[in-house]
Image 1: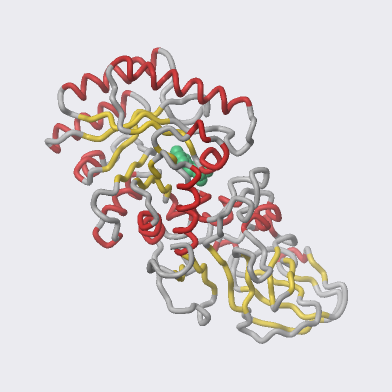
Image 2: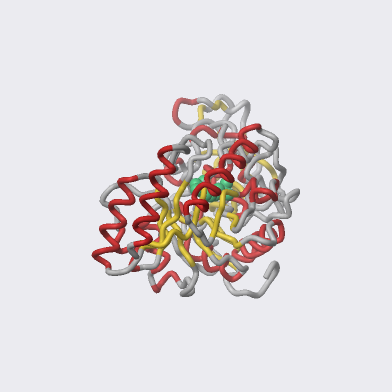
Length: 396
Ligand SMILES: Cc1ncc(COP(=O)(O)O)c(C=O)c1O
Protein backbone atom coordinates (compact mmCIF):
# COMPACT_ATOMS: atom_id res chain seq x y z
CA UNK A 1 0.00 0.00 0.00
CA UNK A 2 1.31 3.39 -1.00
CA UNK A 3 1.48 5.96 1.72
CA UNK A 4 4.36 8.38 1.68
CA UNK A 5 4.15 11.78 3.24
CA UNK A 6 6.91 14.24 2.43
CA UNK A 7 6.92 17.99 2.91
CA UNK A 8 7.05 19.50 -0.59
CA UNK A 9 8.65 16.85 -2.68
CA UNK A 10 10.79 19.23 -4.77
CA UNK A 11 13.92 17.25 -3.91
CA UNK A 12 12.39 14.03 -5.20
CA UNK A 13 13.06 12.60 -8.66
CA UNK A 14 9.34 12.58 -9.24
CA UNK A 15 6.22 12.76 -7.17
CA UNK A 16 2.49 12.30 -7.33
CA UNK A 17 1.03 15.03 -5.20
CA UNK A 18 -2.37 14.09 -3.85
CA UNK A 19 -4.68 16.87 -2.74
CA UNK A 20 -6.90 15.37 -0.08
CA UNK A 21 -9.02 18.53 0.11
CA UNK A 22 -9.92 17.82 -3.51
CA UNK A 23 -10.94 14.27 -2.59
CA UNK A 24 -13.11 15.57 0.24
CA UNK A 25 -14.69 18.20 -1.99
CA UNK A 26 -15.36 15.64 -4.73
CA UNK A 27 -17.03 13.28 -2.28
CA UNK A 28 -19.25 16.11 -1.07
CA UNK A 29 -20.13 17.08 -4.64
CA UNK A 30 -21.02 13.49 -5.48
CA UNK A 31 -23.08 13.12 -2.32
CA UNK A 32 -25.07 16.17 -3.34
CA UNK A 33 -25.86 14.38 -6.60
CA UNK A 34 -27.26 11.41 -4.66
CA UNK A 35 -28.76 12.99 -1.56
CA UNK A 36 -30.90 10.04 -0.53
CA UNK A 37 -28.20 7.42 -0.86
CA UNK A 38 -25.34 6.25 1.33
CA UNK A 39 -21.88 6.71 -0.17
CA UNK A 40 -19.40 3.89 -0.76
CA UNK A 41 -15.99 5.31 -1.66
CA UNK A 42 -14.29 2.87 -4.03
CA UNK A 43 -10.63 2.77 -3.02
CA UNK A 44 -9.52 -0.40 -4.79
CA UNK A 45 -6.20 -0.52 -6.64
CA UNK A 46 -4.62 1.64 -3.95
CA UNK A 47 -7.26 4.28 -4.29
CA UNK A 48 -6.92 4.34 -8.09
CA UNK A 49 -3.23 5.05 -7.53
CA UNK A 50 -3.87 7.88 -5.05
CA UNK A 51 -3.29 5.83 -1.88
CA UNK A 52 -6.13 3.78 -0.42
CA UNK A 53 -5.88 4.68 3.25
CA UNK A 54 -5.45 8.48 2.98
CA UNK A 55 -8.22 8.67 0.39
CA UNK A 56 -10.45 6.41 2.48
CA UNK A 57 -9.95 8.71 5.49
CA UNK A 58 -10.65 11.77 3.36
CA UNK A 59 -13.80 10.19 1.94
CA UNK A 60 -15.02 9.25 5.41
CA UNK A 61 -14.34 12.79 6.63
CA UNK A 62 -16.58 13.98 3.78
CA UNK A 63 -19.42 11.65 4.68
CA UNK A 64 -18.70 8.26 3.13
CA UNK A 65 -19.98 5.49 5.39
CA UNK A 66 -18.82 2.60 3.21
CA UNK A 67 -15.53 1.75 1.48
CA UNK A 68 -15.31 -0.60 -1.46
CA UNK A 69 -12.37 -2.65 -2.71
CA UNK A 70 -11.90 -5.41 -5.22
CA UNK A 71 -9.79 -7.88 -3.26
CA UNK A 72 -10.21 -9.03 0.34
CA UNK A 73 -6.56 -8.19 0.96
CA UNK A 74 -7.24 -4.56 0.07
CA UNK A 75 -10.21 -4.51 2.40
CA UNK A 76 -8.34 -6.18 5.28
CA UNK A 77 -5.54 -3.61 4.94
CA UNK A 78 -8.10 -0.87 5.52
CA UNK A 79 -9.19 -2.55 8.76
CA UNK A 80 -5.59 -2.54 10.06
CA UNK A 81 -5.20 0.04 12.85
CA UNK A 82 -2.53 1.95 10.89
CA UNK A 83 -4.99 2.73 8.11
CA UNK A 84 -6.85 5.09 10.43
CA UNK A 85 -10.28 4.17 9.14
CA UNK A 86 -12.78 4.76 11.95
CA UNK A 87 -14.55 1.76 13.46
CA UNK A 88 -18.06 1.44 12.17
CA UNK A 89 -17.19 2.29 8.59
CA UNK A 90 -18.41 -0.63 6.50
CA UNK A 91 -15.94 -2.16 4.07
CA UNK A 92 -17.07 -4.32 1.17
CA UNK A 93 -14.91 -6.36 -1.20
CA UNK A 94 -16.09 -8.25 -4.26
CA UNK A 95 -13.30 -10.09 -6.04
CA UNK A 96 -12.90 -13.48 -4.43
CA UNK A 97 -11.17 -16.64 -5.59
CA UNK A 98 -11.39 -20.09 -4.01
CA UNK A 99 -9.38 -20.42 -0.81
CA UNK A 100 -9.62 -16.69 -0.06
CA UNK A 101 -9.39 -15.26 3.48
CA UNK A 102 -13.08 -15.71 4.32
CA UNK A 103 -12.58 -16.23 8.03
CA UNK A 104 -10.34 -13.15 8.35
CA UNK A 105 -12.96 -11.20 6.43
CA UNK A 106 -15.72 -12.30 8.79
CA UNK A 107 -13.61 -11.52 11.83
CA UNK A 108 -12.77 -8.11 10.37
CA UNK A 109 -16.47 -7.35 9.82
CA UNK A 110 -16.14 -7.02 6.08
CA UNK A 111 -19.13 -7.28 3.76
CA UNK A 112 -18.25 -9.89 1.17
CA UNK A 113 -19.79 -10.34 -2.25
CA UNK A 114 -21.03 -13.69 -3.53
CA UNK A 115 -21.89 -14.52 -7.13
CA UNK A 116 -22.22 -18.28 -6.92
CA UNK A 117 -22.25 -21.56 -5.07
CA UNK A 118 -18.56 -22.19 -4.45
CA UNK A 119 -18.25 -18.86 -2.65
CA UNK A 120 -21.34 -19.54 -0.56
CA UNK A 121 -19.88 -22.92 0.49
CA UNK A 122 -16.61 -21.30 1.50
CA UNK A 123 -18.14 -18.42 3.43
CA UNK A 124 -20.50 -20.73 5.31
CA UNK A 125 -17.60 -22.99 6.29
CA UNK A 126 -15.62 -19.96 7.47
CA UNK A 127 -18.59 -18.62 9.45
CA UNK A 128 -18.85 -21.95 11.30
CA UNK A 129 -15.14 -21.76 12.15
CA UNK A 130 -15.37 -18.13 13.18
CA UNK A 131 -18.45 -18.81 15.26
CA UNK A 132 -20.21 -15.74 13.91
CA UNK A 133 -22.26 -14.86 10.86
CA UNK A 134 -20.76 -13.44 7.69
CA UNK A 135 -22.11 -10.29 6.11
CA UNK A 136 -22.77 -11.12 2.49
CA UNK A 137 -24.01 -9.19 -0.49
CA UNK A 138 -25.43 -11.12 -3.42
CA UNK A 139 -24.21 -9.86 -6.76
CA UNK A 140 -26.54 -10.02 -9.74
CA UNK A 141 -25.31 -10.01 -13.32
CA UNK A 142 -27.93 -7.70 -14.77
CA UNK A 143 -26.18 -7.52 -18.12
CA UNK A 144 -22.53 -6.63 -17.64
CA UNK A 145 -21.55 -10.17 -18.53
CA UNK A 146 -18.65 -10.24 -16.09
CA UNK A 147 -19.00 -11.13 -12.40
CA UNK A 148 -22.34 -11.73 -10.73
CA UNK A 149 -24.99 -14.40 -10.69
CA UNK A 150 -27.04 -15.00 -13.82
CA UNK A 151 -30.77 -14.23 -13.58
CA UNK A 152 -33.27 -17.08 -13.57
CA UNK A 153 -32.45 -20.44 -12.06
CA UNK A 154 -28.95 -19.49 -10.93
CA UNK A 155 -30.28 -16.47 -9.01
CA UNK A 156 -33.14 -18.47 -7.54
CA UNK A 157 -30.69 -21.10 -6.30
CA UNK A 158 -28.23 -18.58 -4.87
CA UNK A 159 -31.01 -16.70 -3.09
CA UNK A 160 -32.53 -19.90 -1.71
CA UNK A 161 -29.20 -21.21 -0.45
CA UNK A 162 -28.22 -17.87 1.07
CA UNK A 163 -31.57 -17.65 2.85
CA UNK A 164 -31.12 -21.16 4.28
CA UNK A 165 -27.68 -20.19 5.60
CA UNK A 166 -29.15 -16.98 7.00
CA UNK A 167 -31.85 -18.99 8.79
CA UNK A 168 -29.10 -21.11 10.34
CA UNK A 169 -27.42 -17.96 11.63
CA UNK A 170 -24.36 -18.43 9.42
CA UNK A 171 -24.73 -15.25 7.43
CA UNK A 172 -26.71 -12.09 7.09
CA UNK A 173 -27.65 -10.92 3.58
CA UNK A 174 -26.74 -7.26 3.87
CA UNK A 175 -27.00 -6.26 0.24
CA UNK A 176 -28.18 -6.95 -3.28
CA UNK A 177 -26.09 -5.33 -5.95
CA UNK A 178 -24.93 -5.16 -9.53
CA UNK A 179 -22.65 -3.20 -11.87
CA UNK A 180 -23.27 -1.32 -15.12
CA UNK A 181 -21.67 -2.10 -18.48
CA UNK A 182 -22.21 1.22 -20.27
CA UNK A 183 -23.11 3.88 -17.70
CA UNK A 184 -20.37 6.04 -19.21
CA UNK A 185 -22.40 6.20 -22.45
CA UNK A 186 -25.58 8.00 -21.34
CA UNK A 187 -28.59 6.77 -23.29
CA UNK A 188 -27.04 3.41 -24.14
CA UNK A 189 -29.95 0.94 -24.27
CA UNK A 190 -28.20 -1.50 -21.94
CA UNK A 191 -28.55 1.01 -19.09
CA UNK A 192 -32.35 0.89 -18.95
CA UNK A 193 -32.28 -2.86 -19.55
CA UNK A 194 -29.90 -3.39 -16.64
CA UNK A 195 -32.02 -1.23 -14.34
CA UNK A 196 -35.12 -3.24 -15.23
CA UNK A 197 -33.28 -6.51 -14.67
CA UNK A 198 -31.87 -5.26 -11.37
CA UNK A 199 -35.32 -4.28 -10.11
CA UNK A 200 -36.63 -7.71 -11.11
CA UNK A 201 -33.80 -9.60 -9.43
CA UNK A 202 -34.10 -7.51 -6.26
CA UNK A 203 -37.88 -7.97 -6.23
CA UNK A 204 -37.48 -11.72 -6.61
CA UNK A 205 -34.99 -11.94 -3.74
CA UNK A 206 -37.18 -9.78 -1.51
CA UNK A 207 -40.25 -11.84 -2.37
CA UNK A 208 -38.38 -14.90 -1.09
CA UNK A 209 -37.54 -13.15 2.18
CA UNK A 210 -34.28 -11.31 1.64
CA UNK A 211 -34.27 -8.07 3.60
CA UNK A 212 -31.15 -6.20 2.46
CA UNK A 213 -29.76 -3.11 4.12
CA UNK A 214 -28.59 -1.75 0.78
CA UNK A 215 -29.35 -2.21 -2.89
CA UNK A 216 -26.82 -0.62 -5.23
CA UNK A 217 -25.64 -0.43 -8.81
CA UNK A 218 -24.38 3.13 -9.45
CA UNK A 219 -20.71 3.76 -10.29
CA UNK A 220 -19.38 7.29 -10.98
CA UNK A 221 -21.10 7.89 -14.31
CA UNK A 222 -24.42 6.59 -13.00
CA UNK A 223 -24.06 8.67 -9.83
CA UNK A 224 -23.52 11.73 -12.02
CA UNK A 225 -26.11 11.13 -14.72
CA UNK A 226 -28.76 8.68 -13.59
CA UNK A 227 -30.67 9.47 -10.37
CA UNK A 228 -32.97 6.46 -10.82
CA UNK A 229 -29.93 4.23 -10.37
CA UNK A 230 -29.02 5.53 -6.92
CA UNK A 231 -31.20 3.16 -4.83
CA UNK A 232 -29.85 2.98 -1.23
CA UNK A 233 -26.19 3.55 -1.94
CA UNK A 234 -23.90 4.89 -4.67
CA UNK A 235 -20.46 3.46 -5.35
CA UNK A 236 -18.27 5.99 -7.15
CA UNK A 237 -14.57 5.48 -7.75
CA UNK A 238 -12.95 7.59 -10.44
CA UNK A 239 -15.03 10.72 -9.84
CA UNK A 240 -14.01 10.98 -6.19
CA UNK A 241 -10.44 11.42 -7.41
CA UNK A 242 -11.65 14.29 -9.62
CA UNK A 243 -11.26 12.44 -12.89
CA UNK A 244 -14.12 12.31 -15.39
CA UNK A 245 -15.45 8.83 -16.17
CA UNK A 246 -15.55 9.74 -19.85
CA UNK A 247 -15.14 12.82 -22.05
CA UNK A 248 -18.75 12.40 -23.21
CA UNK A 249 -19.94 12.93 -19.63
CA UNK A 250 -17.90 16.12 -19.31
CA UNK A 251 -14.63 17.50 -18.07
CA UNK A 252 -13.94 17.42 -14.34
CA UNK A 253 -14.73 21.15 -14.25
CA UNK A 254 -18.07 20.58 -16.03
CA UNK A 255 -18.90 18.03 -13.34
CA UNK A 256 -17.78 20.21 -10.43
CA UNK A 257 -14.87 17.89 -9.69
CA UNK A 258 -11.25 18.69 -8.97
CA UNK A 259 -8.44 16.32 -10.01
CA UNK A 260 -6.58 15.24 -6.89
CA UNK A 261 -3.33 13.97 -8.43
CA UNK A 262 -0.52 16.05 -9.89
CA UNK A 263 2.30 14.01 -11.42
CA UNK A 264 5.57 15.84 -11.89
CA UNK A 265 9.30 15.19 -12.09
CA UNK A 266 12.53 17.12 -11.73
CA UNK A 267 14.32 17.48 -15.04
CA UNK A 268 17.45 15.31 -14.82
CA UNK A 269 19.41 16.86 -17.68
CA UNK A 270 19.13 19.67 -20.20
CA UNK A 271 21.53 19.62 -23.13
CA UNK A 272 22.16 21.12 -26.55
CA UNK A 273 22.10 18.81 -29.55
CA UNK A 274 22.51 19.45 -33.27
CA UNK A 275 19.82 18.94 -35.88
CA UNK A 276 19.37 15.40 -37.18
CA UNK A 277 20.01 13.83 -33.76
CA UNK A 278 18.06 10.65 -33.10
CA UNK A 279 16.31 10.60 -29.73
CA UNK A 280 15.64 7.60 -27.49
CA UNK A 281 15.27 3.94 -28.43
CA UNK A 282 14.52 3.31 -32.06
CA UNK A 283 15.24 6.92 -33.03
CA UNK A 284 11.55 7.54 -33.65
CA UNK A 285 12.21 11.22 -33.11
CA UNK A 286 14.98 13.06 -34.93
CA UNK A 287 15.65 16.69 -34.00
CA UNK A 288 14.50 18.92 -36.84
CA UNK A 289 17.31 21.42 -36.12
CA UNK A 290 19.69 22.43 -33.37
CA UNK A 291 17.73 22.36 -30.12
CA UNK A 292 17.77 21.54 -26.44
CA UNK A 293 16.57 18.26 -25.01
CA UNK A 294 15.26 17.75 -21.50
CA UNK A 295 15.43 14.41 -19.73
CA UNK A 296 12.34 13.60 -17.65
CA UNK A 297 13.13 10.85 -15.14
CA UNK A 298 9.87 8.93 -15.39
CA UNK A 299 9.19 5.93 -17.58
CA UNK A 300 6.87 3.08 -18.21
CA UNK A 301 8.06 1.38 -15.03
CA UNK A 302 6.50 4.35 -13.26
CA UNK A 303 3.28 4.02 -15.22
CA UNK A 304 3.97 6.52 -18.01
CA UNK A 305 2.34 4.72 -20.92
CA UNK A 306 4.73 3.63 -23.67
CA UNK A 307 1.81 4.20 -26.00
CA UNK A 308 2.27 7.91 -25.31
CA UNK A 309 5.64 7.82 -27.08
CA UNK A 310 5.79 10.90 -29.34
CA UNK A 311 2.38 12.10 -28.10
CA UNK A 312 2.33 12.62 -24.31
CA UNK A 313 2.13 16.28 -23.21
CA UNK A 314 4.32 17.81 -20.49
CA UNK A 315 4.37 21.34 -19.05
CA UNK A 316 7.87 22.79 -18.64
CA UNK A 317 8.32 26.40 -17.61
CA UNK A 318 4.85 27.34 -18.79
CA UNK A 319 5.04 25.64 -22.21
CA UNK A 320 3.53 22.38 -23.39
CA UNK A 321 6.17 20.00 -24.72
CA UNK A 322 5.64 16.61 -26.23
CA UNK A 323 7.40 13.33 -25.46
CA UNK A 324 10.15 13.09 -28.09
CA UNK A 325 10.46 9.51 -29.30
CA UNK A 326 9.94 6.49 -27.14
CA UNK A 327 9.09 6.41 -23.48
CA UNK A 328 11.74 4.16 -21.89
CA UNK A 329 11.52 2.19 -18.66
CA UNK A 330 12.73 4.99 -16.39
CA UNK A 331 12.87 8.13 -18.50
CA UNK A 332 11.76 10.01 -21.55
CA UNK A 333 12.92 13.08 -23.43
CA UNK A 334 11.20 16.30 -24.44
CA UNK A 335 12.39 18.70 -27.13
CA UNK A 336 12.68 22.08 -25.40
CA UNK A 337 13.11 24.00 -28.66
CA UNK A 338 16.22 25.86 -27.49
CA UNK A 339 14.92 26.78 -24.02
CA UNK A 340 17.33 26.06 -21.21
CA UNK A 341 15.54 25.31 -17.96
CA UNK A 342 17.85 24.48 -15.08
CA UNK A 343 18.32 20.82 -14.25
CA UNK A 344 15.75 20.15 -11.52
CA UNK A 345 13.16 22.32 -13.25
CA UNK A 346 9.68 20.89 -12.82
CA UNK A 347 8.13 18.89 -15.63
CA UNK A 348 4.40 18.48 -14.95
CA UNK A 349 2.81 15.54 -16.74
CA UNK A 350 -0.69 16.11 -15.46
CA UNK A 351 -2.66 17.80 -12.73
CA UNK A 352 -5.84 19.79 -12.22
CA UNK A 353 -4.89 22.20 -15.00
CA UNK A 354 -4.57 25.33 -12.83
CA UNK A 355 -1.13 26.18 -14.14
CA UNK A 356 -1.99 25.24 -17.69
CA UNK A 357 -0.64 21.73 -17.24
CA UNK A 358 -2.17 18.77 -19.10
CA UNK A 359 -4.73 16.61 -17.33
CA UNK A 360 -5.00 12.85 -16.92
CA UNK A 361 -7.66 13.02 -19.65
CA UNK A 362 -5.06 14.61 -22.00
CA UNK A 363 -2.70 11.71 -21.32
CA UNK A 364 -5.49 9.21 -21.88
CA UNK A 365 -6.14 10.74 -25.26
CA UNK A 366 -2.43 10.78 -26.10
CA UNK A 367 -2.05 7.11 -25.17
CA UNK A 368 -5.34 5.88 -26.64
CA UNK A 369 -6.69 4.78 -23.28
CA UNK A 370 -8.95 5.97 -20.45
CA UNK A 371 -7.98 8.32 -17.65
CA UNK A 372 -8.68 5.54 -15.12
CA UNK A 373 -5.66 3.69 -16.49
CA UNK A 374 -3.44 6.77 -16.43
CA UNK A 375 -3.86 7.49 -12.70
CA UNK A 376 -4.11 3.87 -11.57
CA UNK A 377 -0.89 2.79 -13.24
CA UNK A 378 1.39 5.29 -11.51
CA UNK A 379 3.86 2.94 -9.90
CA UNK A 380 5.04 2.45 -6.35
CA UNK A 381 8.45 3.97 -7.23
CA UNK A 382 6.74 7.36 -7.41
CA UNK A 383 6.25 8.70 -3.88
CA UNK A 384 2.83 10.08 -3.04
CA UNK A 385 3.06 13.47 -1.40
CA UNK A 386 -0.13 14.33 0.48
CA UNK A 387 -1.36 17.87 0.88
CA UNK A 388 -4.38 19.18 2.78
CA UNK A 389 -4.58 16.01 4.86
CA UNK A 390 -6.35 17.87 7.68
CA UNK A 391 -9.87 19.10 7.45
CA UNK A 392 -8.70 22.67 6.88
CA UNK A 393 -8.48 24.32 3.50
CA UNK A 394 -10.73 24.39 0.52
CA UNK A 395 -13.47 21.90 0.03
CA UNK A 396 -13.74 20.77 3.64
C1 LIG B 1 -17.89 -3.22 -8.76
C2 LIG B 1 -17.46 -1.82 -8.93
N1 LIG B 1 -18.19 -0.84 -8.38
C3 LIG B 1 -17.86 0.45 -8.53
C4 LIG B 1 -16.73 0.81 -9.25
C5 LIG B 1 -16.42 2.27 -9.41
O1 LIG B 1 -16.50 2.62 -10.76
P1 LIG B 1 -16.13 4.08 -11.24
O2 LIG B 1 -14.67 4.23 -11.00
O3 LIG B 1 -16.48 4.14 -12.67
O4 LIG B 1 -16.92 4.99 -10.40
C6 LIG B 1 -15.95 -0.18 -9.84
C7 LIG B 1 -14.79 0.17 -10.64
O5 LIG B 1 -14.53 -0.31 -11.69
C8 LIG B 1 -16.32 -1.54 -9.67
O6 LIG B 1 -15.60 -2.53 -10.20
